[in-house]
Length: 153
Image (cartoon, rainbow, N blue to C red):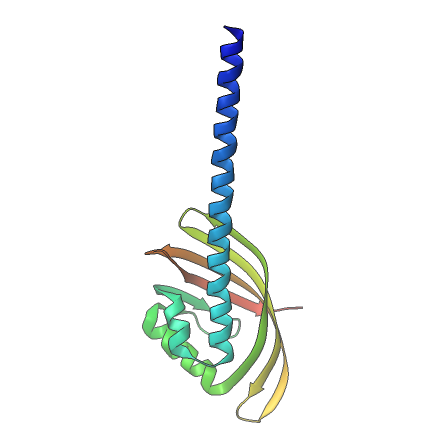
């Protein structure tokens, strides 16, 4: 009887371990997918491509720039990014510092560093920010749901 109990407990532990391993693998896959979304966003910023940016946002996404008004939804997002790209050209790199996944939602904390070319003056200056992304999974894809940045001090 005791041997059966020991075997049953061992089987339960194996099942628990296998379940935890599968969950960890799934979370790592989700984090890689989110990382790809963030790097596509970086590429869209660096190429001043509003359409590419919009494809990464949820339809009701929110953009909260440090020195500008909040943009909510596709129409305002398009206007905001068109305005940004008409004034500056970014050349930045993203550094992903943290990604946390909870079900169909995630957040990512990043920093970026590079340069900004101001079109009006043709002057280039250093650019360095901290960013916070809230993402949601929609039809198998991670979308930017909320995005905020501020200047790194």
